[in-house]
Amino acid sequence: MTLALLIPIIFMPKKLLSIWKKNIVDEDELNAAVTWAYRLFLDREPENNYVVEEKRKKLLTTREIRTEFLSSEEYKSKNQPLCHLPMSGNEPPLSIEFTSDLREIFAHIKTVWEKLGKTEPYWSVLTCERFKSEDITSNQDDFYSSGKENVETFFATLLRNGIKPADYETCIEYGCGVGRITAALANKFSKVTAYDISSSHLRIAREYISQSNLKNVEFVLLSSPEDIRLPKTDVVYSVIVLQHNPPPIIQFIIRAMLRALNSGGVAFFQVPTYRLGYRFSLREYLSSDIKREDMEMHVLPQKEIFRIADEEDCRIIEVLEDGWAGIAHGERSNTFLIQKR
Ligand SMILES: C[S@@+](CC[C@H](N)C(=O)[O-])C[C@H]1O[C@@H](n2cnc3c(N)ncnc32)[C@H](O)[C@@H]1O
Image (tube, rainbow, N blue to C red; front, top):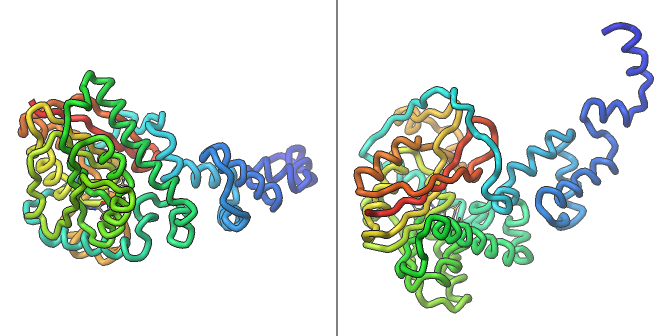
């Protein structure tokens, strides 16, 4: 850098220099930026000064603030489908190993979710600070109303494709969690059967459905892969569930969901279909002990879903880009609308 350029930078006021670096150093300015990020990205005020200060302590640049808010579950759930191009088309194939022996993987996923359901049941569904246990009482209405919005998206997708929701009576929700979407589905269909791998999530879902005075919901706890034998149904619905399972399990569940459909029935489910750098090796997965109790994020490529649909005599009606699994480049999540012939 020449001296002529260096001199103005040395004498530049601290605030101006920080903007030039996109690094906000002034505390008030940073508080204001975080507060405005709540308004711009989440369409609401921050809960309190404490949450603003917590974010201020960890977010030091405009880019960090933007990334934090754009990748939050709350932003994603309020802004679906996100308008971005997840892939350039030049991405390489993914190395994914499949197996038919699912018992050990399934048992591991069950342990992770049982634990999450005991510690942070709502936050484990939508990973957003205000759905943490200490704050859930004041935010429970927002939590459950986000489920209504998800069902509205489902119905809009049906109608856009000339499919009449009124023709359907029975619905399976796969991976119902704490019933965030179950109640909204129960208001639309005569009978909903809601499955989950975690008894701790199901306990809360049962309570919520009973408080909501809904009598048309049956809950089923899944204990092993053999339990994923789903009864005949008109509709299968599943979002933000498959992504937490390794590819061999995702593949198995999708087949079970499509197999369960009555003729003319539809499956509407979300699954990440590509992530740059993702790989799945069974041996590595079973032997690794890193972060084994964390929520995992996996991928099943589109071609596998198309193949299963074909084998189960189904037709792909629509593939939506949904942004549920992140918005980084090279990260693609899709919601599929698939109909049984
Ligand atoms: C992120 S939560 C989503 C819950 C619900 N779908 C929603 O959107 O509100 C994921 C849920 O899927 C359940 N789950 C994860 N893997 C599963 C599997 N293989 N079979 C059934 N449920 C599963 C978890 O126990 C958890 O309740």
